[in-house]
Image (cartoon, rainbow over all chains, first blue to last red; front, top):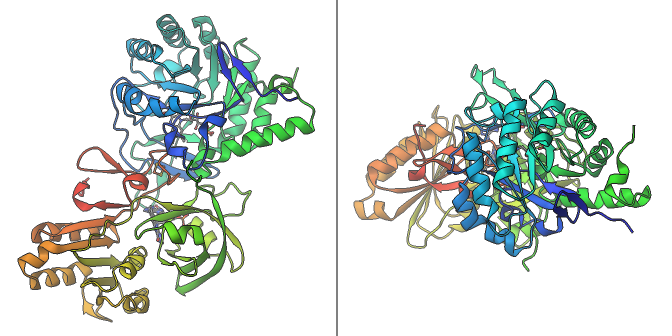
Length: 301
Length: 266
Ligand SMILES: Cc1cc2nc3c(=O)[nH]c(=O)nc-3n(C[C@H](O)[C@H](O)[C@H](O)COP(=O)(O)OP(=O)(O)OC[C@H]3O[C@@H](n4cnc5c(N)ncnc54)[C@H](O)[C@@H]3O)c2cc1C
Ligand SMILES: Cc1cc2nc3c(=O)[nH]c(=O)nc-3n(C[C@H](O)[C@H](O)[C@H](O)COP(=O)(O)O)c2cc1C
Ligand code: FES
């Protein structure tokens, strides 16, 4: 019997396939196509204390096998999330991980304190890596000292499992991951988008309203996989793999690199049922290759 | 529980170049034909199954539907790689699509519909004209020149009054659709104008000019918007356009919206 269950600290997932923040709304948007509760869980769109309007358009630009976005963390704010979005997820029995965004350590503390006491939230994913908001996460995620401080502050605020989501836009990803572990993180997830841009040569100006955007999709998978491999070998806490996963084969690569679970992002935008297909592909692959647990797939080196 | 929405794989009935770089795509899709309303759109995959490049689906408005045969049509112009690849799909092949998506036009019985379309922007308007068959409605179609005037015959079949504007005067009135619209409104009395509802799709400057005229005449106006889309299903928030207050998300709040909600100068 194949056991798909995975543990991330006290967080129990029925299977290792999660939906990545910002690509699945608050779950309900996907329910026309997919039974979200059959997945390991959902990481909802990044939430801040106050609602955010997001960046000026254009916000997206397609690149070869990739997508640049500068959504700018548009979200309904923590109170409306709890009041209007969470009840639906709770009713459906979905494992909910809330992606949190703050402009300061105090904001991260206040946000995690607020979310920590709410029924139906199973873990927090702390986004210290979004490149879009000028005053936002980018600073934290590229500085080990600040990463440690944010992690510790959030840890002291709540008993929920804490996943720190890492930015790939750093020189040494292991240094940052270690800072998370020392700060008391339950796990790390990686990668967030790679900072990029596009220029409209007809209009002779940057394509995106915000000039820079985050690159996601198949184009970033090799970078993500390399970083997951590295981090899985430099910390003891679980690693959640993200970046360009569009088929079960991609997911297996991440498990082999050492990921305990994976998140499906951009693939959901193209095919809202991708995560379901990836999950069934994982099961078939494990059967054919006689793997009993997800962890068995990790390459020992 | 509600039937889950599917990602459909449907048979292409034909994909024909009706004017240089303008294609009419016919697809057998009983599912979409029964549920779609005018102004809604579909996301279409333009490449084969396994290819990741280009990997985003492309949004196209539903051009026309035959509920009896389950046929749906799209009218599109080649502007880049995605539409170019779409044009290579042949009769008998399958195409992957999601739909119907978004908010269509809001139609009310007592109104006098005025349909205004420019260029490829006429795409969502044929389905609408067909539904409005038998009303006092008027259709104003515009193009740069006669040879670029699209689907005139099909619009005529709706039985609505048709007015045409070409910029070079090669057919119909010489000038812009907005000029024809202006003259039409000037002809109507106040009470008729109050009952008018304008439905429009076309280039942004045309829509803006039309909206300004509607404001002057006190006429209600709905427009179908275009923007870049990644998902078309409300997941990514990438399709934002500037509204009077904050942003509108074209794939969920639109593509058809009340023109007064939009920030036309933004
Ligand atoms: C709701 C909706 C309905 C649409 N309905 C139709 C339709 O019925 N018929 C039709 O021909 N087209 C329609 N479009 C536009 C169509 O989706 C784009 O032309 C198509 O996606 C372009 O893909 P591409 O790969 O060929 O071009 P790309 O290579 O992506 O782009 C080529 C050029 O077109 C511009 N462009 C691309 N997409 C858009 C866009 N959405 N808005 C403005 N500029 C753009 C780019 O800036 C670039 O200069 C619709 C768009 C939306 C959002
Ligand atoms: C449109 C869009 C919005 C995103 N929003 C968020 C967000 O709010 N918070 C976050 O931590 N990551 C966000 N991400 C990053 C994804 O969660 C993911 O880390 C990244 O896209 C890489 O995975 P992928 O290649 O599978 O998409 C967003 C990505 C996209 C494409
Ligand atoms: S295109 Fe993704 S939300 Fe509208």
